[in-house]
Every structure is written in C-alpha cells, then in structure tokens.
Length: 122
Image 1 (cartoon, one colour):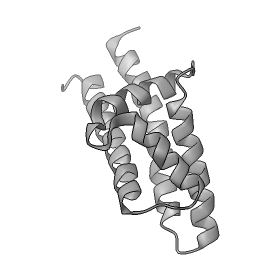
Image 2 (image 1 turned 120 degrees about the horizontal axis):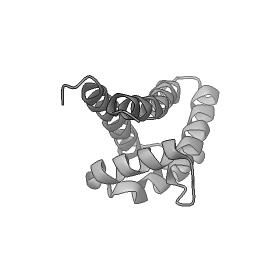
Image 3 (image 1 turned 90 degrees about the vertical axis):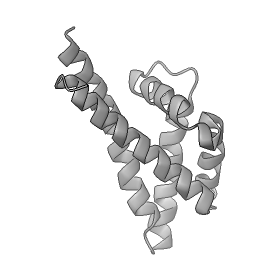
C-alpha cells in the first residue's frame, strides 16, 4: 500500500471515531435530559469499544494507541473506563466533560496531522 493509501485509511478510521464523539458531545450537552442520557450511554459504548483490549477492530486499536500516547494528564486510557462508567450512570461532571472534550480534540488533531502526512506536508 502506498503512503497515501495508508494515511488515507488511517484518516478515515480516526475521522469516524472523531465525528461520532463530536456528535455525541453536542447531544450530551442537550438541555433535554432524555437526549443527554441517551448520548451518554452511546458515548460510553463508543469508549468501551475503544477500550476493549481483546478487540481485533483496527479502528479501535488505532484510537487506543493515539489516546494512550496523548491522554497522560487524564491517566491515559485507565481514566476512560471511569468516564464510560460515569456516562452510563448520567453522572458527568466538569472533570469528565474536560476529559471527553480533550479526547475529541486529540482525535481531531490526529486527523489533521494524518491528512497533512497524506498530502506530503508533514
């Protein structure tokens, strides 16, 4: 596979998770408690998919590695488990929202970096 093909595949996989997380963050902040609770449960499922150490899903594995590398201030992926639990219980505080938004930002930045590499700019 060419570099462009490899980076294109990586970009698509990262973008998929980034877009899902971004959309769920918006829904999580919805004033309608039902919408917010459903978004929290959906986001928890996405995070648990990423956390699955036995996964063979290349998208989840890629996102795991990116988050392990970049989430040190939130204790890496170990804190993602606690955040998923808080989301499932609809107990999302400022710390959890900051960590979720940090994850979204990390994935967006990784998408931008991958797109730049794909275009030969990095």
